[in-house]
Length: 117
Image (tube, rainbow, N blue to C red; front, side):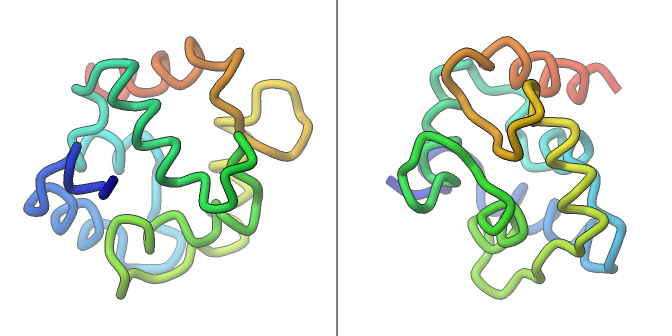
């Protein structure tokens, strides 16, 4: 499975280019630009599975720091500030990792809110 099985390459390029500058990454803006906010929960779960590099069922801080590189190999790493902000937005229970199971509603709400803005 590849990210481009779910998202258009042109949207990925737009999203990556929009956050090239350090500390300019916003999860909601990225999700909207890349087209993820328009996907079904099943499609979002498939993308989550791709982002979960170690297949632990969670996206941990080290995986989150490399988030953009899952979409484009040459993309930059997220800064510590961006990673921390993203983790706070996605980590519903404060355990330091973002999971899909039990948090589907949270992910879907983040994406739906991104779509509305």
